[in-house]
Length: 113
Length: 110
Image (cartoon, rainbow over all chains, first blue to last red; front, side, top):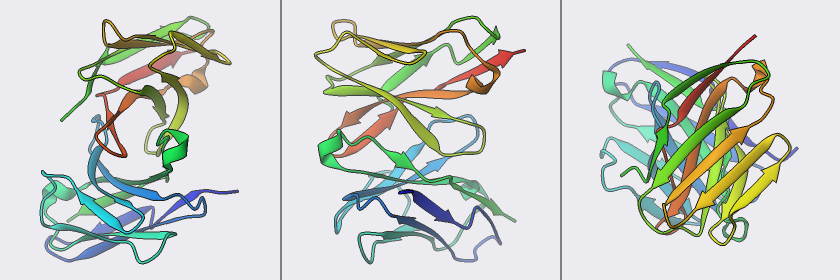
């Protein structure tokens, strides 16, 4: 089945230690998104790619970076995680001819110790 | 910025009852989408309603859209325990981006 896969599902990192979260998709969608979601809140868009074009949200901290080496994969790098970065990180994909209906992965729960 | 506000923030009903959630948005839209999120999981797309539509059905789901009031509602009929989840409305803002409302946490009591 076509899907969005996130690895790992749970990630524990130390304060200040760089961490990378990964997302892959078999849907061949143009657009890939990274969201941060904290408890009982709506998903907050960090950035997205339309093909190779990178679109950063104005309020996304510089601590968060992303790479999309090809259509299928997208990575979220947190250069120096702080305690406030503990959250669920959601990857999603969409395509323009489907009204940007989004397909989400299961998420990676990040804990910062 | 948040595009939508949802009401109520939390809703608890008995199994078999109907659940209604409301969403208001600020700017004009092409379509409005509803998503469900089970605890600790990713979001799942439920239904999309276009700006030229007033009502849409999918199984036990009914969505209405009132563009003059910039509001939408999601009705779940004959609720089941498995419907317990958070429900979010979302609309396109700018290019390619969805902006989500704050969500309604729905609890179905057996």
